[in-house]
Length: 487
Ligand SMILES: *[C@@H]1O[C@H](CO)[C@@H](O)[C@H](O)[C@H]1NC(C)=O
Ligand SMILES: *[C@@H]1O[C@H](CO)[C@@H](O)[C@H](O)[C@H]1NC(C)=O
Ligand SMILES: *[C@@H]1O[C@H](CO)[C@@H](O)[C@H](O)[C@H]1NC(C)=O
Ligand SMILES: *[C@@H]1O[C@H](CO)[C@@H](O)[C@H](O)[C@H]1NC(C)=O
Ligand SMILES: *[C@@H]1O[C@H](CO)[C@@H](O)[C@H](O)[C@H]1NC(C)=O
Ligand SMILES: *[C@@H]1O[C@H](CO)[C@@H](O)[C@H](O)[C@H]1NC(C)=O
Ligand SMILES: *[C@@H]1O[C@H](CO)[C@@H](O)[C@H](O)[C@H]1NC(C)=O
Ligand SMILES: *[C@@H]1O[C@H](CO)[C@@H](O)[C@H](O)[C@H]1NC(C)=O
Ligand SMILES: *[C@@H]1O[C@H](CO)[C@@H](O)[C@H](O)[C@H]1NC(C)=O
Ligand SMILES: *[C@@H]1O[C@H](CO)[C@@H](O)[C@H](O)[C@H]1NC(C)=O
Ligand SMILES: *[C@@H]1O[C@H](CO)[C@@H](O)[C@H](O)[C@H]1NC(C)=O
Ligand SMILES: *[C@@H]1O[C@H](CO)[C@@H](O)[C@H](O)[C@H]1NC(C)=O
Image (cartoon, rainbow, N blue to C red; front, side, top):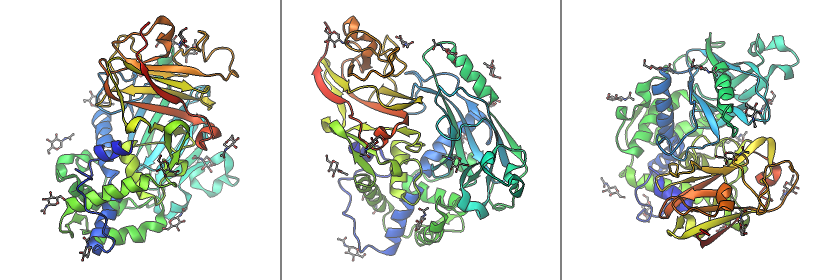
């Protein structure tokens, strides 16, 4: 995964040739490095918000994804096959918005997560948190920067004292006027369930409301032009700086106490009055050291947890809400953009076998789970396979993941998710090339890898994890390479 990040990042070309970090480098280098790390999430924001906008046609309007992704869906990398989405680009610069959350059965994992411009998951309403149906006012008011997040009106004694509760079930204060909302609904393993989700999507609405406070009257309306890459330099580091020049003046850091430092750094780096002028001799070199520092930060104990059997996980405090941890914010913008907080989901990564998974044509991996992963009743888990391009792997079974809904069986053939919810014994998953069909008793536990073998990628997802997962005390699966099982 370390290698993954460094290879994939658009911040740098080659790390190997980067100069070692020079601690006595000039202030402009230091400030530019800071700015590149600080501004990196704007690159995936432009892509993600730009894509949503091009389908929804407007900000503050949902695009409802109605079907689960398949191998032919190649607009986003590592799509999940667990949830349907409803996505909206949020712009609170000229109006507040009111979102309607329908009543949803709590056996299903569901969430309406709010992200600020820099991908902080600053508020959640869902099956694990504050899951009350109703009308919520969402607004951006810099004078309320200490009260970011969800405020349920049922928890506020004197409702009249705060106009955020006037006719609403709750209100949400946003840290930046621009952001995203990407509601997710767990898809159960049955054909009538899509219809149920579509109804929930159809009942999810966004309305504009008159802005309740003055806010930042100077922030422009967010339009497609501001997200269009051809508005900016083709050189990614330059583009980050240009986007920062445009967005940062109206979109403060999540931790508002850091605003003076951020402004000072951006200014020293050459960002002034909406424009960027380079202050360094070679921006490419500075970007390389920035990427290197992000890679170093990822390996620090406060940011990553080592788990049993060669698994690793982003430390819960370093995922989703980043405060002033701009290194991890940049890391996640590249590796897991729009990650939720650890309370909602965990994405452990297998770090054995030289950081990349690879199979010969006649090989397989066997994952031995110590028992059912401890997720809450309304949670779910899945293990999904991707090819080298990070898209779903074509196979005749249409099996793209194994999960708590995929019909896994124990070695005696009984279902793992059957009547005996309390049973905790081991079960195995077979990751084997799509063209090497295993014997019948393995079919329901078979996760097809690319036909013919080769390099690929797996994502383990835990939604609504229990404490044993969050604190790393659960025994993670043992992963072993094996000869392909064909008879
Ligand atoms: C580090 O930066 C200082 C100040 O610009 C410079 O004098 C010095 O030569 C640099 N050292 C290295 C190893 O690049
Ligand atoms: C966006 O506009 C296009 C073309 O007018 C239309 O086909 C599409 O349905 C619109 N999308 C939404 C979500 O309204
Ligand atoms: C849930 O609501 C409570 C009460 O309004 C609030 O303090 C808390 O921050 C909310 N939690 C999340 C994750 O938004
Ligand atoms: C299938 O989904 C529907 C709608 O969500 C649900 O009511 C029903 O219980 C599900 N059936 C099974 C067998 O899980
Ligand atoms: C949801 O809305 C779409 C578009 O308006 C409509 O075609 C579809 O039938 C609706 N689905 C359900 C289940 O209400
Ligand atoms: C981005 O801008 C270019 C050049 O102005 C234009 O050709 C292109 O259609 C725009 N793309 C989008 C998605 O708006
Ligand atoms: C915000 O950042 C300041 C320093 O920039 C730090 O002292 C403070 O603890 C941070 N606030 C929170 C809530 O972590
Ligand atoms: C900047 O540095 C990169 C590699 O560090 C090098 O390839 C490039 O030629 C340099 N550009 C200039 C203008 O010196
Ligand atoms: C995690 O393991 C790696 C190597 O396996 C080691 O370099 C690193 O220091 C460990 N980190 C922690 C926080 O224990
Ligand atoms: C879920 O779907 C798979 C096919 O994708 C099927 O084999 C399995 O039996 C189903 N499981 C349940 C519990 O319905
Ligand atoms: C399939 O059968 C073999 C041989 O009896 C056994 O070792 C293996 O655990 C079984 N696999 C599953 C997933 O039940
Ligand atoms: C992790 O959480 C579990 C369940 O709450 C608890 O029993 C265990 O002691 C915790 N372990 C650590 C290391 O905190």
